Image (tube, rainbow, N blue to C red; front, top):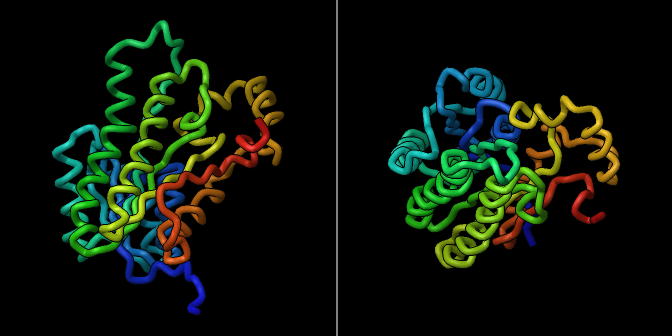
Length: 255
């Protein structure tokens, strides 16, 4: 039997929200595994560092401006990426937004911003990619879920709703699109210190409380996440479909 391979040479990937943090780490990991990439953010200028680091690996990096809340843009940008790269084998739905607020203070505007970015945007990007992948008869879609896909976090109700919904989307699309050759999986990062979550880490008491709940005794590093994305995108995961892999240092296993 052939050995499973993590090699992504010749694959074409689209990563949303790739200007920094987890999205940037995943994009770089896919490039190091051999993939050419289209990377998006709301501003092309914000993608300069990611582009340079991808190109330093010898892989191609196409930069595109995208606000995933714009459904028309989800289809247009995905199609543009596929045309420029000569196809589309991998989509990573990473673009996201989080804002902490007591539930009694959440207004419609905040709810819509979070759900439109994290859930609606991810679905319509997946839909656009799914049409392209279905025609080719193969593809891998990876959604970025969260620990809030599994547990309730106070003051994060809209975010938790969006990420719980995204886990449901992942499972349903996996079941629907498997006959088309498309696998849909997800990653649920635990506590990672990124620009989006920095507000939490400024509180040393919060850090101490959270570290006590993580069996490995440390927060996630951006280097912890890329290998999981490479695995899910690769032939090594050819029979994995509809699952979400927590990358959390054992947090969920211990509660």
